Image (spheres, one colour):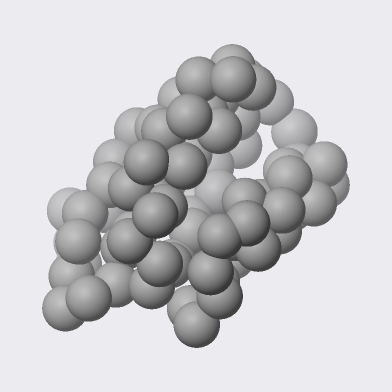
Length: 79
């Protein structure tokens, strides 16, 4: 996947369902700085709704997302 952005940290929430992926994202971004990029891997279709809302609510930028074989990839630049 050469077309995906560079990232500073990765969070794999495969197998977890709402609200766990978002809770783990909250914990992960606490340890990161503004401008850093978090890669999130998820299997829960609810993340297609929850991740953009997470970004909007907290002032982060969803710079890339894709669905791949039942998995969802998100790249979030921290605000």
